[in-house]
Length: 430
Image (tube, rainbow, N blue to C red):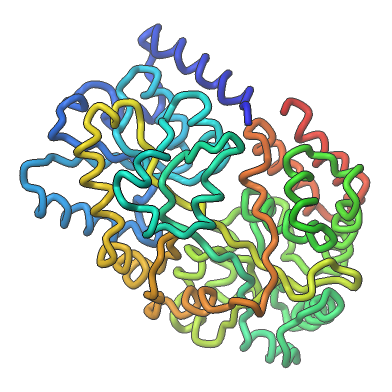
């Protein structure tokens, strides 16, 4: 998939580097200068910082790796949402990290094609990792030309969380499985002053839920084509899915002013029991406090009559984080190999699951027992139907316009026709 946005970003960032301009987020993280060419120094750039689930575990296993390899120096660089831009700019200066741990989304989808990172097909077998990684994860990380972009590591289940106590207090005894039951539950919850479904309608959480609801009437192949092309008016089922979303929105299913909320707003509303339901990936489920998790169940999104799925739907993805290898990393590939193989050791993988509450793209029997909702989601199995995560198919240049269109969709009173137009318009420059 060719990314005009990424190429423009590379060009503009390259001009800034050539001109000696300061690039926000770059100089502060230490990517420019230093001893990155030293074969005994490993530079790891990741988004596992702060209080995000798994971050403390990541810091702990890095220390463990340092102790086991006293002759190696490990530098850990952390960025959040700006990681992609920071890495791209540092790559243009030939000062990029050796290994990058980040998701397959937006800018990163085109990194391998653009030469920002290298294909890792050969390392998969040379390092004896194929037997460790789930085949479905390898498939998701492989592009349409057969290039394995990165070595898959962290995954996620993405179910719906239902607060049973709030539902029962409103007179809802059963978790809603259909759209009609969800609408009826929403009315009862609102009568008790409780928001029904909280969602970040102004960011990626809302975009994913909208995509999930639209897929009520789409097969997996239709969904992949839809999100690759943006043909919302031409692909059978897309229009019906949008109309189902509007029916739910206009019936008051989503929290008030959802079009302006973010994932942080959503998490706060659910965790403080201001809302009874949320569409939440594993990292959000891991943050639900024990006093709320104790009376919370997880399941799928309720379906309308005529849906192509026979069970409520969830999202699953193996693309939350992987090990990308940079051109700099290939110059010290022995050191990179030592680190990556360490990270795939069963004891290290189990720590991310047990201590960090993460789902993994790696073969393991370990469950996140300390994080009951994550563990419940890991065991949903055939009780739910899986729909397509759009991230692998939406062109990078359409990602941000899609989020803007999502905010439009969650705005009360906006018609299904206008939503369809906004979603198609997001692909105008793709």
